[in-house]
Every structure is written in structure tokens, then in C-alpha cells.
Length: 422
Image (cartoon, rainbow, N blue to C red; front, side, top):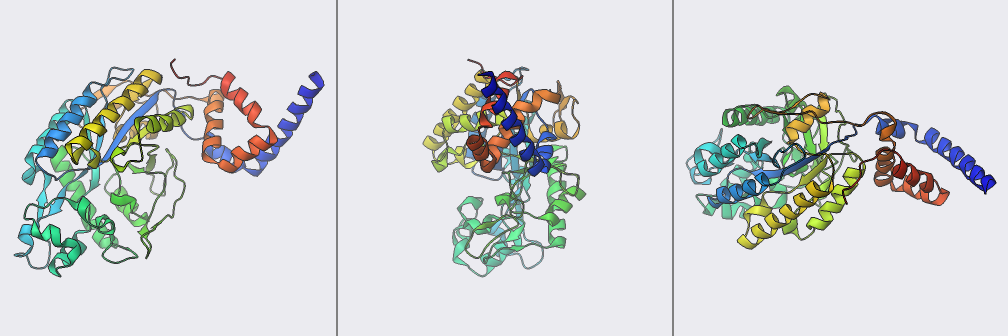
């Protein structure tokens, strides 16, 4: 028996050495990523902003539900609301000619929603971040309206229009022109103007600059990142990839296919990654499916970052109740079963990544919380192996065929790790 065990260990050591030589850069990069002993939990929710009066009531109900959830430090769950600041004023478009077109602004034209946001900030359950000045390409939208394009007919017919979600999908991109496919980037000068107006408006509305952002429709490129950097945006929320355009058939074209939490771009900005999908209105996600994704992140000592868009909470009453009930179930399971849970906003996680061991500060109400603990040294080995296993199917297959999965599993079981409460 001893001979067999010795032979297996020799073979596994030899195979592991070959793998390390072959994938050295990948292994080193993965090892150098941040690993968390605490469990940051984020709820990133895009598209809050201009909407119907009932949106204020829905948002208030959502924030009340979040206030009931508590983490290991006693903090309530926090909604990172990626805010849209304005919509074109379709009623005033006919009277406007050329130049800058009229807009409806969140605080002035949708005061009920804005007041609910401010109350949420005060209660530490709502942290605004910039989504975009608008959730469409304003110049392209106005041009279509003035040409009486059928794709904007509903918007033109409604003097109180705000619902960009009803536009054709290509028209909802902000930093591209989707009037025709393939989409075209807005260009450097236009991007500069849009982002300058957006960041100034955001700070006026919320009293502090946005620290992170996420591009509408996940469509952006290096020029946009450069302009974000010029306006002191420190982090970029992603779905784990970047798309600069949509092709002639509508497909999203990726130019960064694998983004990981903590990756740094050419401008010194840190990437954040959503790894738990909870979009129940789409019929694709349930509390159980989202919880399983959260467990994968937990085993890898990653932040648990939940993606749940506004529309889950602003469509029919039944859809709203269904989504809210599901989110409560999910958060209950996370706080009851995962250890060291810490509710954070995206802005707070960005600062945690850029300045480890610093206290957590909500810049919008100046509340301070203890630092987020990390895993260092050999204790990272289990989560490190889980990252390789979940991210790289070919490596996982090699591990199964070669038998390396056995010592890998043993390492994950018998080295310090993040366990699930039973």
C-alpha cells in the first residue's frame, strides 16, 4: 500500500510540475489576485433613475426589505444603484432646433424617485453610482425622432416618456450609436462631453463624485475608460467581459473576454465582476440558482456580486412581488449559511481593493465600518484551486483524467478554508 501511495504522489508531483511550467503565468496571476476571508456581498442594480411615479414606491419597498437583512457586522444590505440621470424631453423636441436637445433630469422632473434615493442614502441602504447620463445615445435618438423613425414612435407619442427599456435593444447603448448595425462608437470628443456632463450632474445630485460606473448595455472601449479615468472614476463594474460594439447581426463583440475582480486596466482602474445572476423576470434565475452561483464565489474567496436590474422591480405588481420575495430568500440564505458576510457597495469594494486593510467608508453618508479581512499565504491554496477548477474547464478535465483532482480535493478539504454553516 505504501508503495502505491508513494508512486501516486510521485506521479502527481511530476504532473503538477509539468502543469506549472505550462501554465506558469496563469497560476501566478491567479495566486496574486485578492482572496477574502470575509465575504463581501454586493447587490448591483442598473437603470434606476427617471421613471413612473410608482417607481418611488417600488424602490422604497425594496430598500425597506434590504434594511431587514443584516451581515456579520450588523450592517443592512446595500443597493448599489447604477443611476441614469436623464431622458430626452420628447415633448420639447419639436420646438428645439439643432444643438443641445432638451432633457428631463432626475431631481427636477422625477422628484419622488429622487427623494426616495436620498432617504435610502441617509439610511445606509442605497449607494448611487453612475450608469450614464442617459440609457441611450441622445443624438442618435433625437435624429430618429426628427425623422419620424417608427422605432421611436411610442416615445414621440408620449409627452411624459421615460421608458428607454421599450426601445429596440441596439438603441439603448449609450457610448455607441445603434441606429444602424454594426454599432459605431460615439467618438472621443462626444464621449468627453457626455461623461463630463454626467459626472458633474451626478455630483450635484448626490453630493459626492461617483467612484465606479458600468456602461449601459455593457458597451464601452478604451476611449471611454480613458475619459472615465480623467473624471476620477476608480473602478468599472462588469459582467466579466468587455464589448466595444455589436456586429451587423446584433451579436456582442468582446475584446476582453476574461475580466477578473481586481484586474487593473491601463489607466489604473480596477475591474469589478458580477458573478451571481438574479434576473427572475427573465425567467432564467431563481433564488436557488443564484445561491449556487454564490457558493461558487464563496469557495473561491471572491466577493459575491449579485446582478439584478431595475425592471425586476418595476414591471407588473405580481412580477415585483415575485422578484422581491426571491431576493429576500436569496439574502436570507447568504447571511445564514455563509461566514463573515459583509454587505458592501461597489464603491466600497473598489476602495477595499485599491487600499487593503483600510476601514470601509460610505462616502455618501460618511458612515465607517471595520476593514474587510483577506486571506494571505498558504491559506489561499484551497480557494486558488477552486478558481482554477471553475474558470478553466480544460484544466479541470486534465485534473480528472490524470487523477490530480484527488490531491486537489484533499487540499481543499484539509487546508484552512471558508466553510458553510450547517
